[in-house]
Image (cartoon, rainbow, N blue to C red; front, side, top):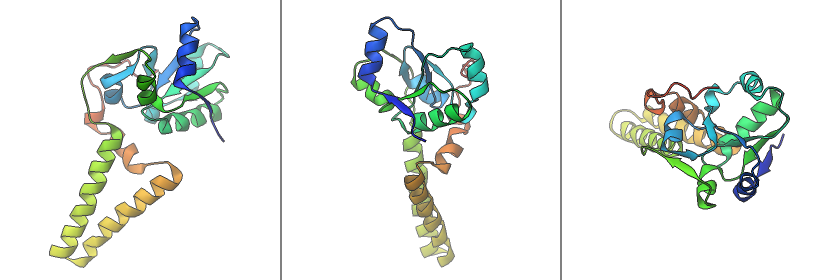
Length: 183
């Protein structure tokens, strides 16, 4: 199922015309704290509950816009929302990065390492560790590098990253200073 999409420029035009924009940002709380669109509220993808969101919308048939960093998690969230009965879920193409580039108003906070960078750092470290252990300790450790490589191929093919889902739940990706990020 392909989610409906809107460009950042189209979203900006709607806001400029005075339309109320119902916008959720499905990134981790730490990513959200770093930079987010002014109109967005944070509902992390790993805690997205379509039923709870439907309750906050009070039966509204207006579109529910979804944004992430680059659009991938937003698309996944839209699919989950549509499966959960919210037919008006619309993914913002290119995510927050494209919205910033298009000049949409944002709120900036403390810098953090994006989830995508964390995945690259962790995957690269595990591949190097597997290769070193395979060379220095036992050849079977090369399997660690092969496992990570297979996971990266799977993530590329399915656009679903298991390592990213695990890292999103890590304590450093939780904003403990703010408890109102869930719906």
